[in-house]
Length: 305
Image (cartoon, rainbow, N blue to C red; front, side):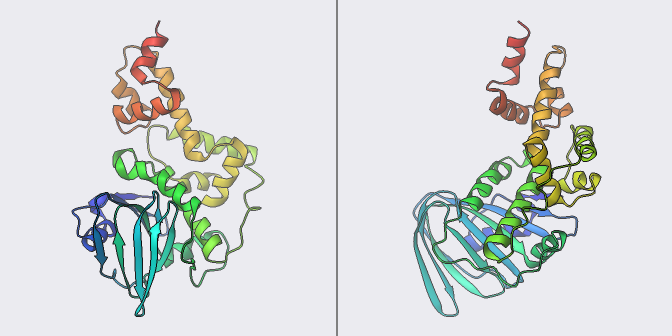
């Protein structure tokens, strides 16, 4: 799933224009069918009232979730104003962009926004062998901790674009679409589809394929194809089998590989970072410290005695 970052994508540009700000941390992920899903982070700390003109009418949905409590909201559609009041953490809304509507937003706010074209939902439904949805319905005042958690998980990718992993973004967008269709599109769950886990040959092939791409980027679709499974079925079956999502498993292998290479004192840490699939030395340091509890340089000193 190719990723386009920040000001290079139309979704971020449109939000920046709508809010009258210089830029919006954002990315657009493109599936193997060509459908795109936009992700953005909107943050404003100082008291301010944003009166937002409508976004262009299109066959798409705009999902927004608050990852911290904040100011009030109001949405106008068909001449009727819906006042949402102060927003609590996890407050979730769905706007159908095929209907012209306007809004006001009072700061402060820390919001994650997802632009989901209908074709992206239709492609996912087809992949999952599920019926297509006609509409997404979300009651005013809904709190969705699942979408809020997915938004928080995506935030480091938006703040550190160079660290973005295609596999990680693919996994989160897949989870988002599955949850939204089930919770707001009336689609029945598909828990049985991936509950059996991977066959032994599939587990061996998936792990071998991921290790072959230790130093590069790999998408969930690429690994799933090696196992003759859809992305969603593979993701569920892999976690059922290994106890970890594919991206988490790959990060663990990269950390293990970095530890082995750090014992070779003549190797620069920057070279180890590139060999193990990290964007640069600082990326390795952040991930390594989070997993091991200390920096690569300090771990090397302690390990070398």
